[in-house]
Image 1 (spheres, helix red, strand yellow):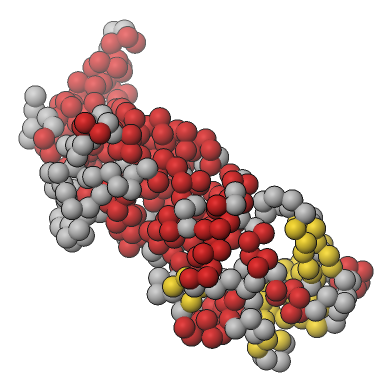
Image 2 (image 1 turned 90 degrees about the vertical axis):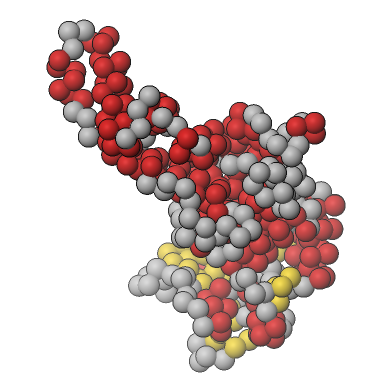
Amino acid sequence: MLIFSVGGAVRDELLGLPVQDRDFVVVGASPETMLALGFRPVGKDFPVFLHPVTHEEYALARTERKAGHGYTGFVFHTSPEVTLEEDLARRDLSINAIARAQDGTLIDPFGGIADLEARVLRHVGPAFAEDPVRILRVARFAARFGDFSIAPETLALMRQMVENGEADHLVAERVWQELARGLMEAAPSRMLQTLRECAALGRVLPALDRLFGVPQRADYHPEIDTGIHVLMALDYAACKGLALPVRFAVLLHDLGKGLTPAADLPRHSGHEARGVALVEATCACLKTPAECRDLALLVARHHGDIRRGPEMRAATIMRLLEKTDALRRPQRFFQLLQACDCDFHGRLGWENKPAPAPELFPSALAAARSVDAAAIARACDSKEDIPGRLHAARAAAVAARLGNGE
């Protein structure tokens, strides 16, 4: 029985990057051997075991055969006779098909080390085309490794997979999983650009794909289109290290502009209302977690209002705080503000430009929350009077804080 470290751990070690997780391949063993050694089985489709001490994953070397559509359409074969090279041959990219033996020796049958040195993402072999999730994985790796290029033959194969309809068999759970991981990389725009280059973006996120080629509003930056603006805003969010819900909201905040009537261009009046419906549909298709969905809807609906904040009077600001449920959910409101800040800075030359009145809404919210709601409730003769009295008191507190009454 031989054990090899494989995949991302070997790749990242060679790149001098911190290793997050280690995976191992076991050659020459059977499930019975692993159980006898105290390993605990966890795999459903093929034998994967947890080490009895470290709890790291050890998978028996396996081969696979295409037997249907999508990433689930495979039949796996494991036996002590399966070789390490046969196991590595089923992997997606050459840089992920390098193994390290227990004595430190590197096994690299597909040129992964040379591709690491050349900064190239290259598929291992023709079996790449059998799994549509690999399109998303390559796009995600492009977002992670910003100085890597995609081999022309790999990009061509990805396009062919889309043309052949293989990408139509992607399932929502895997799309969301890869999309979420890609959004959290250093350059998430590269993931979307890669999906566009191989024509997969229209299959995965059709509402987002429609943004490219739609002009930005003339009073913001006429030389770029809305799609590029979204990419720039997304990379700004990554640069600031913002959380996944914020990055996802930035990704979808301008969807409504993709449905702007041609007669209205380059302006986009009413796009917020159009965008909300598209965000709802997109989140339903992706089965997006509630935290990400709710913030994306909030940003799509109100990012224009936030942008107009410096023009608002205190009572209007107070109504916006109420609409966004800012008093009950201040953390989510601050994430809304973060997404809107990315929207502002996602324009050529605006990356370091100060946003107007950045403390306006935090200050207004602090003022509104300083009002003693319980005291106002006790002073009301009727419960029906409480909401109006509370709103008035909070609006007055905001006006006093901002020096901006109606």
